[in-house]
Length: 413
Image 1 (cartoon, one colour):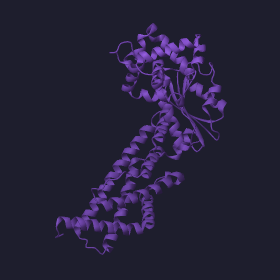
Image 2: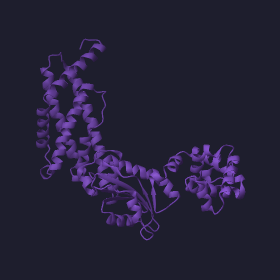
Image 3: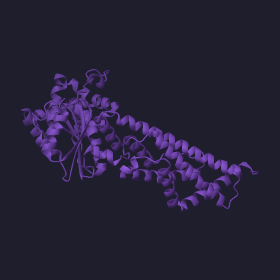
Image 4: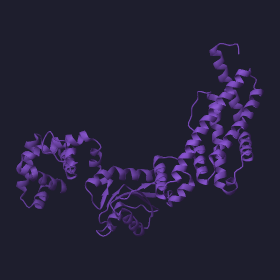
């Protein structure tokens, strides 16, 4: 080609765009021809046995065809993610026992058939196409084939590794992919035996030596479909799904010392749909650090959000402890009386009379103690009640400081 470099580049772009438009206009015809050629050139016994596999093959051919058109239009430098349909079919092939060699041969066959159509449209193009242009088009297709086969090989091998794990590990892998928003094959969803299309979902995380046993008992008593997967011997993720909105209170009413002895449950909030299925689990995970520090039969995310949020910021934990609790250590009994008074005050919705009755003292005594706290903090109590309450709740989780140079998280550890 006797043209300058910029002219070459623009001409190639024009040629590629023209050919892609021509191929796209014949999309249905070409996809069918490629699919038939692959099936005939590299037959596989699984095709005749599985409608699902056949559908997956066709969907992959369509997606890869569209992927290749984008690649041809963009040129050898173009890079795009391997189509989800192709990834899903590669994983499905691994589970169905289709060899990797068979899969790669099919991609090579499909690549060759597409190349024939590219050649046809190049010949019919009204643009000036010479040998270097044809070489450029061939190189572009080869780059695309290399990327696709490399990606398919990686996904196939990963799936073989997953399938080779224990059933419980495989279930956990499926759940994690669902939580991440990845596309999961229907056959894998069926393995979980859970109604993901149910209107309502509620996530639980159970910890303790009898975590799995406790969840199974809840399943029989609540009448909702249960999905549970074990993270380890003492931690189980679970979801309850059904037509009816399952309130956390429904679970609380069922809990008893016998049912949950040595087991701590953490609950998200009831949520709708597959997005809600993910969200309610995320809420349970947020509350889990609080439950691990202060185990009880049931910890509800909505009840511990302040502590859960603060625990994600160590600097904030230190600041709250040092600002609101360490000054109290200068009061009677190293601040124990002040702390007891404040907890009663908060527990009774900041009603001094009720707090006094709970403490077994007169109202005036509580008022005097609160004034002492005002003085030691150096600010009116009503301006820092929220910070004080959160700091006390953190202390209940094990965060406490006696020495100003000591790190509260070190003490908790």
